[in-house]
Image 1 (cartoon, rainbow, N blue to C red):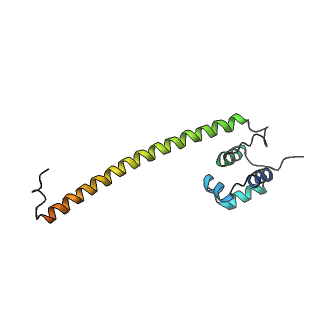
Image 2 (spheres, rainbow, N blue to C red; image 1 turned 90 degrees about the vertical axis):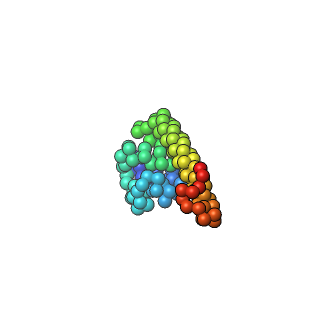
Length: 126
């Protein structure tokens, strides 16, 4: 008897409490696509792999003829590297944003001081 790929994926998702909405968002598809996959007796290997990566689930147990555990482990470790890079970039962005805000606050304080003391923009000593 042939495996029904869609049913296997649906069982895994429901058994492990994965949100269909979250899975759809992660894979950048709509929920209807996910439900359609559940109805498919066969799915392409790369789609099953993409679903596994989105769920961070190793489908090599359900589909040993298609994948090895190492396939998913490599993908999971690459995802961790990407997340680390994103966090680093976010920290750099926040640093420069905070620095910019600090400079704006100092500039506004200088303008307020000039206005209160009736000084022109070039009368202020730096």
